[in-house]
Image (cartoon, rainbow, N blue to C red; front, side, top):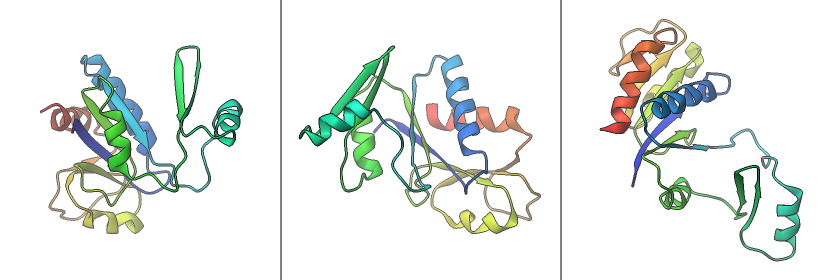
Length: 161
């Protein structure tokens, strides 16, 4: 499997912003990055009406292309991260950043916004913690949210090794 690195945290902790920064920094280094986002807030993300019509007609996989963007709509009862990663392995990417899927065991950065988020420090395979609040001793490499110039290279090194 290609290099996979997760960004996890609760809602409004900065996951999407961090994903964008990592993808941009990887691209600047010539690293071809892909992203997977777990839509964990309920409901189905928006997708093309045409794609929906094709599915209703019986298509198992329906895609819509427009302006260089291919959107796949492949409904299943549920998608496991390993199945999505298998699909992504067909594309010429060097690394895959995953937003969410907290309980998966891939290497991950954990975002801590408040003290209520501290139970996230019990997750598997934590490579670093990025915190909005001062933390007492933690066994993980810890950065404060403002230390972007330290944690972006740290994560990129983890995923490009």
